[in-house]
Length: 400
Image (tube, rainbow, N blue to C red; front, side, top):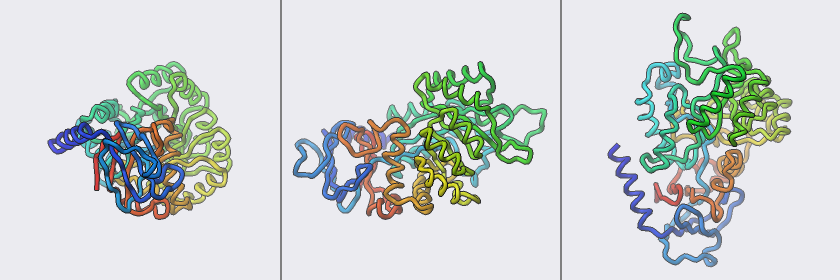
């Protein structure tokens, strides 16, 4: 903790003493295209100028040489769980039922720092998994500079149909606290969505299906009418909805209800992906955790054939934080071009998160969320493991 506090103080002092930065990389990927011999001027928390060095006004700024490096927008992780740690360390059931919220928050502080230092400057965290409103406080702590971490978009507790979620395996006579909020029916759903919004949720997350079938298989949970009610209630406050769905029927209901994104979609079919395309629903396939499952490649091929927008969200927390690049590697292994995988984690994700005027591109007036890596990630996605510079909101957290 002393190290984190010292780092925060050093970063704040460094930023306060500088009127801005001139970043001089070998090349700039602006979120869409690569540009050789570009430079970037940052003042305050915004990108001020981008282009050929001779065309930039650079008086009064500190020069940061990024020799041989590619500068690109800070990466965006659209499916994170900072309050979870890998299941091979502690099973999900035990994390939710046996680890205190204080312990989980302490771990999360390390997760946040690892995420930022790996080049991810924004995350959408999709559920506290039994840790209450802890993401609200973590978001505030990062925003206030108390913790080092990425900018957070949060969903708080997530919504599940009664009886469908976990932890499981306890005697039937015990009522065990769940990893999400059990809620059903008209009035209760409206009240819970409004409660989550009131507590600070930026998005609402709902489980459109889950593993509660007769043999433990995934089956739809909420009815189409219930899902529509969730979406309509959230939408009235300007909040989008993300839906966990792995079955074609769960995906279909969530899409028809008007959700903004579907998470996982492991068993998606061409028919349901076409419906998602028609309705403007983005797919986050979370291949880092589901790519090895039977049928994963077939579902991905169907999504590509349907033309559905594919974003980058890894379900990190199931595996170690700071390794979200695994998702981009999997997207490439499944046939996406490296440049498109980088776009997915920058400009595409920014658009899905309704933040395209703030992050996701190297463009004047946007927040100065920038990273620099060795090599060219639009040609070799593995270059994203070699992060040498991390800047968030004009503050340098890591430099060569």
